[in-house]
Length: 81
Image (cartoon, rainbow, N blue to C red):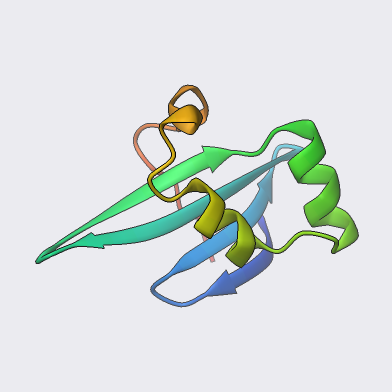
């Protein structure tokens, strides 16, 4: 089962699944919304676990950043509640 670390409804959710941390967030392009899931790297995960880095800050870092393409999880995943 997934453990929710931080979330903002209809915006993003950061969660732990199988000892890995993921961030799923929603981006709106006009009338279309798209959800993305990024697998956090070790340093990002450590900062999130310690509270030194927030999911909200990561969302702003990832939005529109093509460098995260290799870490995208397709299709996007949402934690089961």
